[in-house]
Each structure stands twice: as structure tokens, then as C-alpha cells.
Length: 175
Image (cartoon, rainbow, N blue to C red; front, side):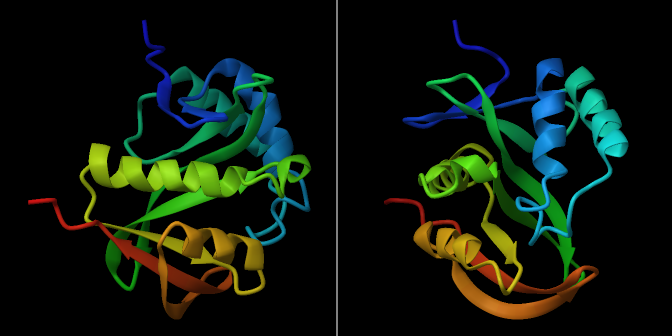
């Protein structure tokens, strides 16, 4: 029987809804200065803990959210990825987000989960378009956006500074 918390699986990763046991690994991820360098910096640990505890209590509350990325081999949470709704130029867009723990960088995990989320967004959620907002200095994140088929559209101003807007429209349905 399939675990109802599992959203999708790749060869090496599981993306699933949050459990109580995910709180501490997610707090560690979002309070890591290296991981959050291009994401506005480390977050307050107590605020994170409170937010993640609430998410763990209601894992199905949001259609668009970030979910734990689990390494199938170890069962450890190694990232936080998903789809978030964002206001961009007075329009609601759905952003594909991929955040991976620094000790797992360089292994292709961000690309692997981003490809799976791209397909999930179009095939399972029926979205017409997804975007990525990339801090201009974040070259690895930019490479992931390009690898999954996104194209640079513009540099926009956000509350935390400029972001490169990458866009991907859903593929045309096959005839």
C-alpha cells in the first residue's frame, strides 16, 4: 500500500508531506548560513520550529507548499522542495523551489527533485506554467533551472533584492 504522505519518488529521492520527525532536520536546513545564503539568510530557529510543528500537524492543509526531500538510501531528510504561490508583477505565479542541505550538494539532487516537481506540476496539478526566482549570484540554482527547461525572462525586484525570473510553460498536449 502506498504511503499517503508520499507526493512523488525519483530514483534516489522521496518527496513527501511533513511528519513531526522532520522538524529538527528542517530547522537545521533553514538555519544553515551556507544553505540560506541566496535565500535571505538563516531563519530564526524558534519561529521555524513553530512553523514546522504546525505543518506536521496538518500535512494536507496547503495545495502549494515545501515538502521534505528524503534520501531513499538513508531515510534522512536532505532538503525541502515544492511549489509555492508568489505574486509577481501583480499576477499569481507558481514557483518551483529546491533547497538541498550543503553536505549533499554536487550530487545532482536539486536537478533530480526539480525535474520530478516540474513533471508533477504539469501532469498531476495541471499547471500551465511554473517559475523560479533565482538570486543573481546563485549560479548552481540557475543551472538547475536551465537543466529542467526553464528560460530566463527578466530580472525583477523583490523585497530581498533582485531575482532572475526563469519561466517554463507546460508542454503542449500530445495529439
